[in-house]
Image (cartoon, rainbow, N blue to C red; front, side, top):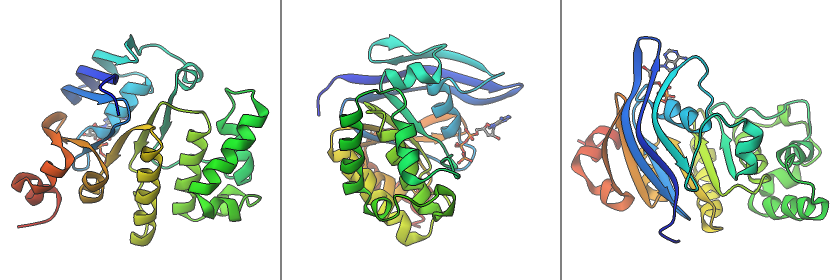
Length: 242
Ligand code: ATP
């Protein structure tokens, strides 16, 4: 891990019409870090990720977002991927009528190094063995957890330097949630920088280096993840402890 800043969000404010969903947040992600953004439903986490990727049409977005030392504004999704930024949205969005293998090829659409792409498919199959076993299967026939894994593997095929994950554990059975977190740790261990939005605060803080808590559009707490796990306010509000 280095001290190089990959992503810097400064005084970000987002309004949906009259609703101020994000009210001036500042956060930083450094190279190699796994950062988690936790908070209750409606706190503004997804809106923050969408502001980073510029996928908030018809919204007022103010503040400054810098990726790799340059402003991130007005870029087409193709340019974001070329600059090494990949997002796995809530709800996954895999191509249901394509096979797992075809989905992975789609993830590499900005690349033209055929041999490298084939090597990467094998590499990610090593991290996601369930996908390898089902390589020819239509993505739409996979379970929710398997689709989540596929969405992550597809995003990784673009060679991201920063991976944004929106609620990867959402709606999954506990056993699958554990598996998804294992995979997130393993991707992080490969040196890929990750910004993880999660409602499962315990698992997210256990996996992350640092964390930010969002409440009603504001960052109300931040720090080392292991310190936050011991913080009485976090324990009471997000870990379900008295
Ligand atoms: P969740 O876990 O439900 O995704 P979140 O922390 O990601 O929660 P956001 O989805 O960012 O929260 O929502 C923040 C606020 O913005 C909420 O009050 C929500 O109702 C509002 N909001 C989100 N999307 C829209 C939209 N398209 N139009 C109007 N208001 C919206």
